[in-house]
Length: 219
Image (cartoon, rainbow, N blue to C red; front, side, top):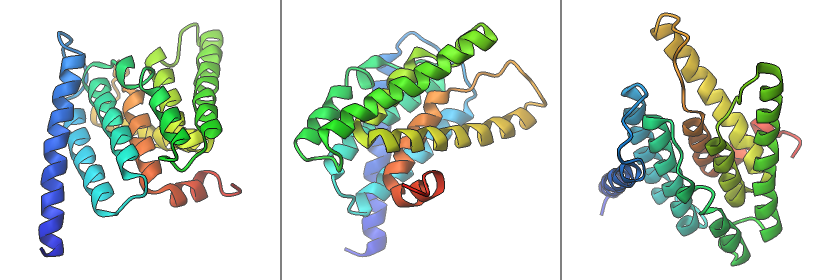
């Protein structure tokens, strides 16, 4: 089989799996209607298919564990992109799976690093929520975002948690600026931060060395 044929097949498999994950995400938020721009789920579908295709064809170490990780993130990205909701079924309740996989040697981090990553995610975003509450009188982030970063930390460790946060914030800022300009300065637009955290986590796994050099050059 030629390289082009293999890539086409992997892209097809990834697209079908992305469609399945979309169906699961709609089931998790059944009865809740979309509250965000239609462009977001379209971009999510393209990004998810491309990320899964890249992971499958790049012979990524620990692929089985990361395939589960990516699938949970994509479901979360879909639900947040369409309804601004994040299901704990695929974040907080799935977090111990990361601890278990690390203990079984199926992730490139130790169990202590996995648990530490979850605690780091909790500490970072809980601190942001506390400061936002004190300064602005309201939560700057939802509890779902905190749960999501704890889940990400279980699969990436504390350093991956931090780089994911930086990458997600950068993506969110860029998209927010573009959408703000396109919407002609409207200030009532709500952007799902969990979407960008999920994308940041996937990009971290796929491009760990490059992103570590960018955001943690002394690590």
